[in-house]
Length: 87
Image 1 (spheres, rainbow, N blue to C red):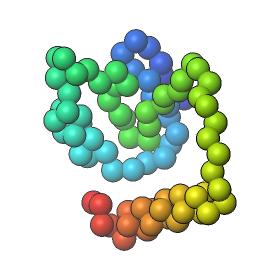
Image 2 (spheres, one colour):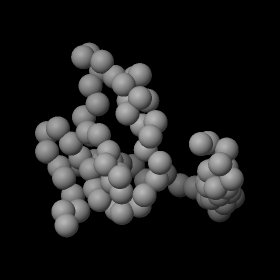
Image 3 (cartoon, rainbow, N blue to C red):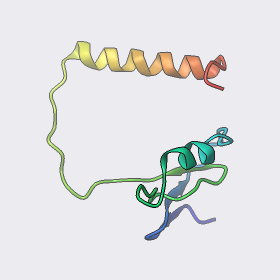
């Protein structure tokens, strides 16, 4: 099974991580146009967008507290998804 598709029209990876994509196409349609083009392609079930940079990015320093706050914020988002608040 092909795991990665990368062309000038698409950049997706098959992670076999199945989530509800039912609103993705309409959200993309709402924010794209001929002038504002979406370059990563459409998603199939079990696939995610795959993007990367070719340049090093400056590393930022974070305190232990800042890192813990980021993890807590991520945990809250996951919890909201699990209880169905976003869907």
